[in-house]
Image (cartoon, rainbow, N blue to C red):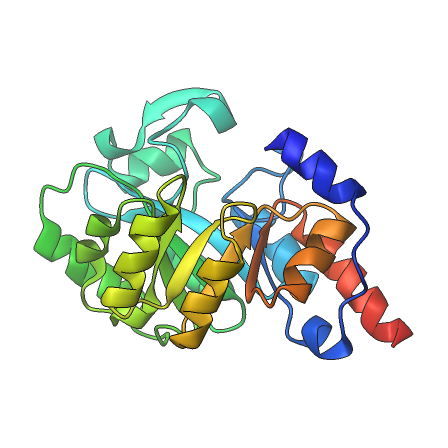
Length: 257
């Protein structure tokens, strides 16, 4: 991926049209973070993206022992926070003491819901009470509108069963090397579209989903030329680890227009 990013960053691209720039929807991947001064999937990271005018944020959901959905990518805090506490082994109050920067999904909704689009990735995990957990997620998101205010992401589409209260149009499979299979699934089940790495989602895939009224999200956009390339291809959602810088570039180009 690093090699691909280097090549794409060096390839000249034509400047996107004003319309493409106006419809640019950047998504901050785990918020604006460096995991030193600001940590991923924290309210501070999400605020930085929101306050810079970034359209959406991507976040990840795990469950505490007492069934509180919390925003963290890994099943434990070792990689990001240097604390190996396992989220599923702790009640939320215990988690708050050990990993105080990990927000609940409810706190994220209060902070950003309805103002910044939420791309919520469902992670594989033990689900001791799936019906109850489904009810909890529905209640947590009840002030928001699916598709308009949030979508669900999943590498494994079977995980969408956890959010069956929301319409299929809010489901976005995340493709790796299985682009063809997930593309067919998304089309057959009337999902909202498809997401994946920008080099894996080619023109044929884009055209198939666009002709079916679905949308495409690609990541991870980290350079001016990668941004131009995806906007010129008509990609709707651009996931980025540098979303604030990319948003600044879009704003600058719009001002020049």
